[in-house]
Image (cartoon, rainbow, N blue to C red):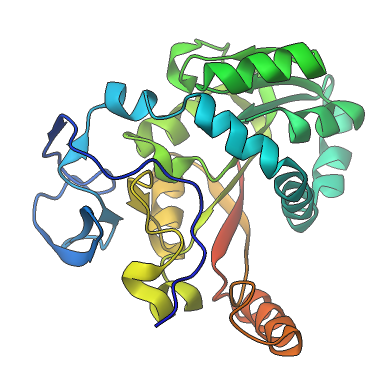
Length: 286
């Protein structure tokens, strides 16, 4: 079987790691999900969350995002930016803005803002923006080239004020985190009432994941968790969010079908919800 083009990842290597309970339900029983080249995933018997376990230490994870990651982001910046704009469109950003404008200053935070292209786009739409990016090279690029305020501390270590932001955007981030629940819980704390969290991540229940298995382009060493729509929904609702909208996209990878077939599959994936990536628009209610 052909291998779907994978996203950038550090090569699998030996790192200091430890066995942890499931990040979603606290369960300690796992069964093998699938083995990849140099690493593998397990599935929680209790809730079904797929994860790498034993898990690398946070310091090891942090060290992966270096200069080489900046080169990858810059090479693909235009396509990532366009995908980000499409995600905002799917999340009905104009509807969010209409709801937010009457509430005072519009503050947006992008976590994992990379080189800052999408953050700059939000700024140009009238948002007061801040970014979080643990890759020092990317954060410095965003500061120097786009005059953006970007922190290199993990979200929880920034100690933002309660209910400070009206929008938090995190694209293809949560699958990289050691502690995804701590992240969404912190996002909930710093969001204003009726504020929104927009989150995207690969969808392990999508058609491509089922088709390619261990060759799926999102089954990579840097993805510590692989969420389905149901496990992502549970994570977010457990943290206090209300799911307002769920969208998936990506029916088949580029080059694996004639353009006409890809067009049909992409449209079907979005309509029927079996796309390669899932986006959830979540609200913080009073």
